[in-house]
Image (cartoon, rainbow over all chains, first blue to last red; front, side, top):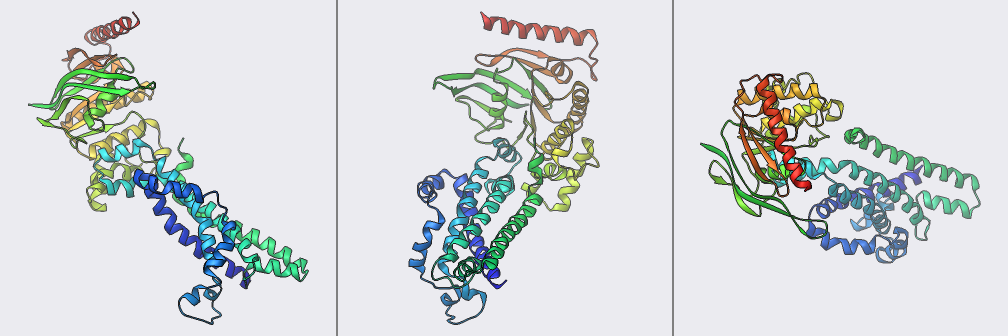
Length: 218
Length: 255
């Protein structure tokens, strides 16, 4: 149970980070040509790079520093002592692209009709952004969040299997493999599936509440 | 006093094969304050383009458009265009769609809803305030679109073939409602349609447009008494003469 909690907190933290960077950046890139020109070459190169390919690199750069250590706490049994920066980076990376790309797509597919209507009803640029572009692309953004969370969850399992990892459900799987504990191994796998489904379900519930109008449009 | 003046405008587009297509050429007309001006013409004669120019969504390549002697540059703040397609915001319910322009003016929620309620009652949507666009019929969506435009309180209301997609009965009812609103609110209306019957029923003046390139071919003042009787001889005569004009345009095209 502790392993699941550690894995989940790593994923959630990394995912929230990806969300806070991915959505604003996606909104800007989708809306402004300048940002699009600036970021799209970098992103096109980084995108095909699987997040798992980054794991060794992340380990090399961030070593096994944890969040607790960054804040100067050396020895702690709290959960922050188990959140390694490298893992956080990899999760962030995995979650970022689906969120970012879906946001860009959402912003780009806002109908001109809505934008022109809003302008003709007196909306200024700021209002246009907040009252039309954001709500209109919300369903796409939420799809991105759902996919992003799924990817993050997959990536963390792989990251935890690597050397240097000391806890987490992925670590548990490797550990039980080495001890030939097939029952724990299989139980862990079932747990991974269940938690993944739960995370996805939570986002879906939120998504359905905010983008109910989309399914019924046309 | 002239409210809207369109002065020898030209609008060209770059076509699919990079050739220049002239949509509108040397088009001029004026529209007096309080007028109900209908513009009829064959499909693709540039009616929608003309409205977009008046609304300030596009710029003419030559010529000027002015409201109350002020030439419009950029968006026309005195006008609101009610689009041909459904343009309601699907993520907002009826009252939030209608009060959109008030929200843009930073008016508080309570005052906003109060003002919007007046227009909701006006277009007969009482009881549907909380409904979402996908939950109501096409006719009701049109009413919401009209109310949303009225709430902005523009001097000039532009309509782009608003009632084209509706069945005849709903269309007739909306036409009557629109006339009542026009008379009570003292608005200037420019209404584009390809439906002759609609134009004769609504307009105080009709402009007939020809296509390739779009320009005004004929101007007809309609002084039939209101409410107009669709079966009266004067109504039918006018209907037929406009039809003949349009047919003439089409036959000269095929030559």
